[in-house]
Image (cartoon, rainbow, N blue to C red; front, side, top):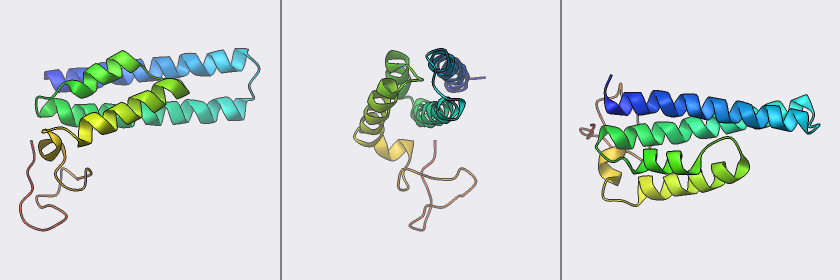
Length: 123
């Protein structure tokens, strides 16, 4: 397991634990189970999407995504907002942008061509 895969696993665990902590805290403060569960799922999905973006960046040698996720954290609206905006900035507006995800910032590894035709540039 390389560095990118290790960071992906560890940040996924961190995302799950911090989101679960927020869920338990909300339930102790009297929030209804439906609202707390919805927030839990939203926090987990937000964190996992940020982790996938960081993983794509790390595979190409750019560790800015992992640094951002480690600094901001997971599991609450503030972390989600700052982390998502920061990740979008680091992911899209850096010199690494074309190496991280050349096809509309969303591509499928099983495809050997880009959405625009021709060969894709994959790390």
